[in-house]
Image 1 (cartoon, rainbow, N blue to C red):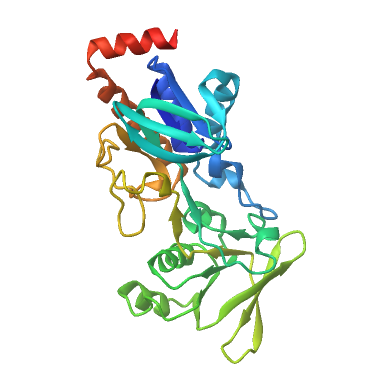
Image 2: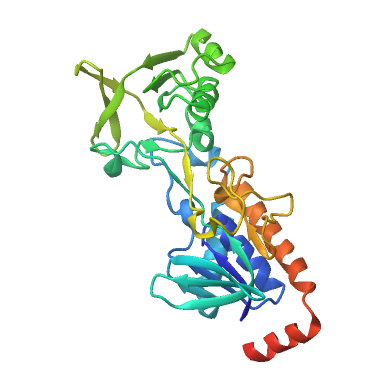
Length: 313
């Protein structure tokens, strides 16, 4: 039985893994890849990426270290988690079981997609899912935000402080009557297009145009330097549904020490209800989760810990 299993190899999971290994825990990372969302970066012509605050170098360093420590990782996807006496059992896609006294879930979240022609082709080449990450790049540029809920309105408001022109494409009226929606309407560099949906993305090397379709079937073209799809995130929390408390959006609820409602079960990063989906925040949350797990494991009876140490040897 391992001391700790970490699910996920993104910023939170990698940080948790390195902290756990530094604490001399018998830890295992189960993940289909290393790096998570830092493997994808918005590509735009003539853009200075040093303006973006990120933790890519830290995450890359941790990923390289874990690649070297092959005994501490399983490159597979977790399929199920169940509580067992004294801990948790994780089964992977190939059916292999792995047991641990504590578990950190850092499986991230997936952005909701438009699911239209051209979107996949231009993802991170003009089409992006996090305006808060890349807004500083849009000085004197034109940007489009797709969405009608608070996430999209916040993205449009942040871009409007920097960009030359921001167009908010709202598939429905959504939250446009909120105080923020009213402020957006009052901004001279913000245009709001309601009740039109994106039906395709077109471009050359980069996305250049969205095709919008009205309810009557008529189409229009909307050009910009980049397009931010802000329809929300779907947390990858299915593995612990029924084991730990989730909020109304399906995110794992954690306290200030990244503890969930289940003993020995911790969570970090975008899969949780922690504030803001940012790489640097996920790094910090991963570190906290690992330290909390270490503290939890210190409370194990000495006899059990010695037995575990003998099993590991």
